[in-house]
Image (tube, rainbow over all chains, first blue to last red; front, top):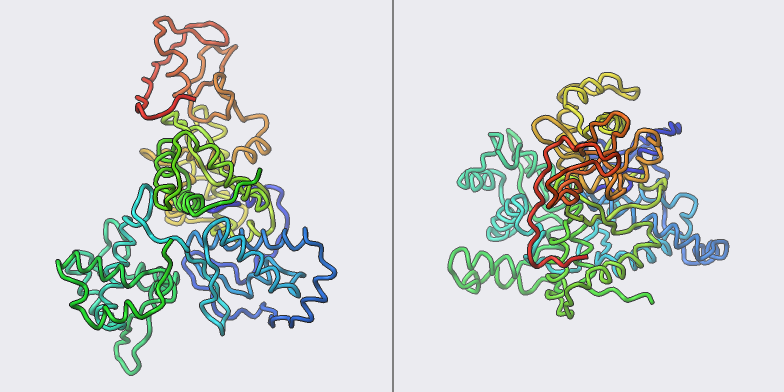
Length: 267
Length: 248
């Protein structure tokens, strides 16, 4: 769903001239690197924020926070992380001096209305994602049973069971055994390789790292930041236990890891 | 009056955001599921109140859960729509300028048609006339596939129609942009695309297929409700309503 598509139309119809920002995402192309158009943004100090707040009405603050919420929700549809630079450039704009206050308000709204948590997953490049505070529960219309989720789950399981990192050929071989061949176009998933190395990586479910000194280039897969935040390792082990008809405790190392890490949300 | 939201409301909202739209029986079962998952008391037939509570919190965000009828099934559908035009929503859309222009041309075709359908060949031809960057044939086909996947359009045998969710969200826009061509169903008075039209050239009223089925149910003699001429079209059968559906 893309809320605001109607708004795009109104704009196209009235043919308002608008410079297309060079950082506007093209479908399928990663645009998360630094962009020359970026005006460097440094967090304002608390005193700067306080001073700026004096010139802003509560209504103005609320309105900006609403816009930030909408921006995040649209990006959330495709699970694309939001760059702080984009947020400031396209949404916050001249209110950048009260950026922390706006984010606080937006965060609160996302939490209280949508049950979504705003998380900064990259302190250097300042990327944000939304994760659900509600536990993934099977039910009508949920995506728990969607094929893509199933595929992702298989990959995350393999990585987890193998200690947190696997070479890419292990993944491809596992998938081939499940009749999902990355070399061929799959009826359900299409270009499997692109789905795994591009879409899942961009969504931060997986992390794909080049292995140095390999020729031809080989990669290894880790869990991505979104997976770490969203996927319960305890539940994953339980699921695998059921699948293999085995007590999860018998995988002692993984069991320990699953129960030691700070686990994602339960309702 | 403003009711606090609980996790049952939030789960409902999150699910609706993921699906795009949900039909009425689906909304009821989702309501039940959400209440039961979070140990909130589930009262059937309180769906509207449940949704109103969510809408009161969505209003400051210029969003609402709105209802609209499916032109295929006659079922009411719920969708989360954006109510206001702001710079933000414009910038954050994940379709490019020329992709949106093609979508707009598809709407042109659908609105101009008699039956709410746009042929894929006509859409492909439109791709050649874009004022923004042109789209190649394969790009257009991929775009159409995405639009269907994102639940803006429906496709059947090479013909494209507006999805229920699209109609719910875009109705104000369409009424504004096509004031002369937009038609309204004679029975339910809502905007109409896929329909039957009275054959009387002086009359020409349009009626949704499900509205036709409902109106002529049980009538052996079928006459146009507006001009009383014989209604020539084959009357579709009313879809069976499940017993658990409440009558409203």
